[in-house]
Length: 284
Image (cartoon, rainbow, N blue to C red; front, side):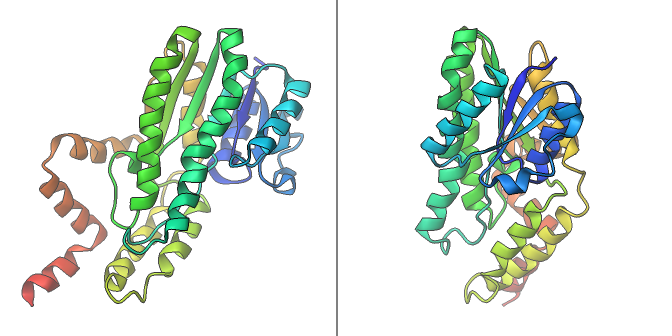
């Protein structure tokens, strides 16, 4: 195969698993992260098909320099996996504006910075694949994940537009929607929630949600489940517009699409344990 693919946010979790999996499947993988030292364990893996590159997706100069390296070592890119992301959690009312901006700078604007940079070469080649790592929360937003969910809803929207705009040019676009996945991402989200445990309005709700959330990532499938979906999106003759992993999450998405919002809200409360807050309020 030996087609060149760029994977952003490859220093850990989903990005790292994707880079390794694609390399073992024959792709020449350029694994990107802000700091090269975080990628050294990947260098040389899979018959030397993984090549670390420094890239900050929020810095267009950094992206240009990285793509110069990619061009020198791998020629034209066949695929781009937009995985780099951060997760800002907390009550929507409480999250500072600068944190909202940080969320969107990476998850949306960073995604488009890299996409804009690679599209000219894909159009010239008349072929290419763009795979955007979204989230189940890009369709159904849990409480206290509103800021993150907003950025992933935006990824859904821009992916639809790109897919339709780029089809005549031979470039295909897919979204991967992971649910809970067992990666260090969960630990970062737990730390973010911890900042609001003493909030006078939302503290009790956040505490209950945090306890539920803490069980999600450790008991979830490994990130290779996402890597396998990325491979399908890169290699299928007719890739799906969306891949949801694990597939059991499709049931939750069906709720969003078919059930009344009031019913979905009650199910969320019961699943997360937040119904205790509602019942306490009703009792008082």
